[in-house]
Image 1 (tube, rainbow, N blue to C red):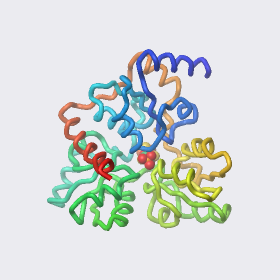
Image 2: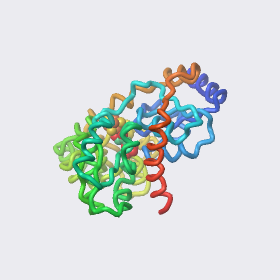
Image 3: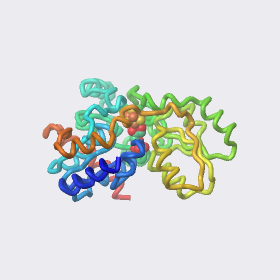
Image 4: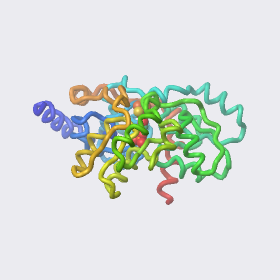
Length: 303
Ligand code: 13P
Ligand code: SF4
């Protein structure tokens, strides 16, 4: 493994590359990160980077977002098969038909969507800023795609009526309310942190509903020393490494996103060596998808 890491570091210098890594990646990949974070942090980093090549260790929509923000850069997803099933739950034609049922309503798309769906939407959001994005809209009602659970959760807090597409994350719905009840019984002093992609019965039992970046921050800044995590289990590696004095328990250890686990060191080395697995976005779609993402990033920077 040491040889492989050395080879990757040499290739990184040669290609002037940066490694952007999502919180759910396998430990070896987290270890080589230049920046590790949630979808919002990673898209902000993708926008700022001066590197010529972005190696995106996450899933396809994240790499595609980086490519939309950086048309002049090369964005590599070390395994092009690493998709997000939730992002594939709505197509452009389905969105167009859905929109026609609610004329005049703005369309908020979760960043977990294809570039083509972003191009048909008005503003993007992530799990970290969905409430703020909804609040930023003048309308009292909005279309939200594709995650029904994030849409309804954020809508409730923002005080907006939501017409949600019926998509969901197959990994987060594995976490059941009984898992939270059992974990609380086993660890009575622990704080329960849950991702908004979980079902309402699960988010309703949580102490905090947060994006993965929000969980990292909450753990760092809060006093409890035990936490139950209702999200993909990959985040536990980072939490344990950064907080050696605290204890972390997965709400359900079967909450594994198989696509996030498709990226490994061998694939990173090979794609950087061969400059393969480059993510490209059709220029016509890119321009419209860019406006949707840029509008989201502006809401944050205006704060
Ligand atoms: P975060 O933006 O909270 O990291 O979530 C991304 C994701 O895909 C969650 O399943
Ligand atoms: Fe998509 Fe769920 Fe995997 Fe996140 S955890 S990338 S939403 S399938």
